[in-house]
Image (cartoon, rainbow, N blue to C red; front, side, top):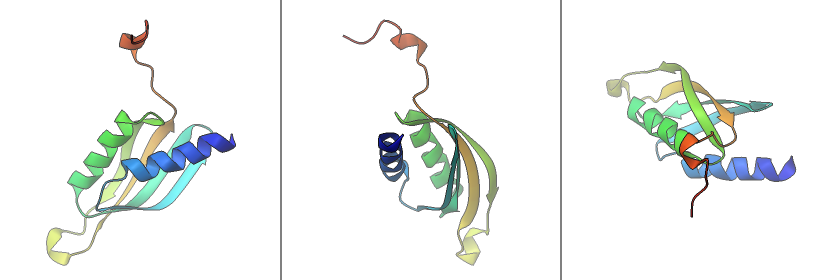
Length: 97
């Protein structure tokens, strides 16, 4: 729905760390594919942790990361998949008070 995509784009902006740049975003149903460039593998890991902690995305899986090496000064290309929506938390079954 229209409001969901607004929240999803807002969440992408909030979860994308400094040094990570998205070049392509595809959504098919609840499946998300994120392609981009990163200054380091650690930045991609940080992005994946942020997605996993997000209220609008979950279950990040890194598909490909191609490093150019630090000496070349070029960025690493990456591709990952994630799911749209909040993941179920079995500890929250009764709700928070």
